[in-house]
Length: 393
Image (cartoon, rainbow, N blue to C red):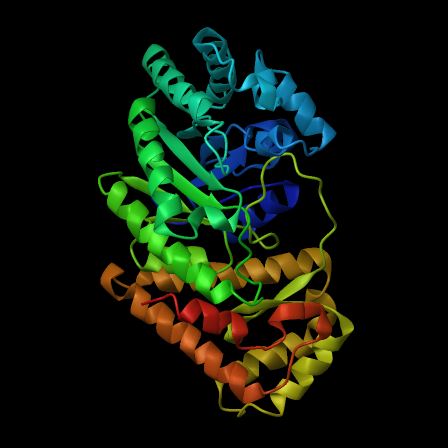
């Protein structure tokens, strides 16, 4: 199968998946959104169904979630244990089993190839350990009783950067994850840090990415015999981890949110972003960006392939800066980027990606003009490529 896995979050993603990623063999969808997008999904593709329960992290912390998602989660028997922190110490195995069988039976109706087994995201204490252990045990019972022959994917979702900050923190997490993985009967692992935006260039982000590399090395060693290891979605860090051979499947977004968001979040209207392809980054399509592109053409040799790409962006700016057009433009670039990495032998991918980001970094320094203020911490055109480049080797 193709190595990348698109995450489908809505109808717009379905359109892009059909048009640009039409030959992908597996897509990941959320169980709570299936009824709204089922008629738009590619017909020949296999499904990875996520149970959409990780938003319970917010409810357990006293934060609200979107009303439709709350209705979805409360439609399951015994789901109160996911919504009320006071119930975490009063977990009964029969109660958990009823919930697990009901939600996984609903996922099974979609005839998926993969299912994410139920787990609550990582938090800063041990309050969820008992529930996660029993959820893992009951998932294995469900698999046995239903004779499910597909892949069960164990989710390891982080919610704060401190959870992967150092070995002291992650050793206990990996120890528990390995135990619960073995109890669950899973044969795949998916991990993501929902608090990471790798297009952010704030102070400390480079060190954070380095710490995540160290954590990923430790995770890969802990789960060395696991046949399926998925990471992301991010913008470029998922590609780095994949290129380094630490994971064999990069999870990818489709044109817009290149970050993982817990289920049930309130949808915000984002700003259109376009891919500045020679710089291996995106930028907000505000009025100042067109002027920046025009200035960039004065700093680049007309013989440089980047000149042609920036010239096209300048000429087509009015069209590609529209909301859907911008998503499609980004997705086309991302598809080409993945194809190139995938064509490189595994042992040469990390070096290729390092050189790819290096070229983008050099070009950004050559342009020597900050992007518009809307880019905030990422105004330096070379900055995103620079911080990702330093994680490649």
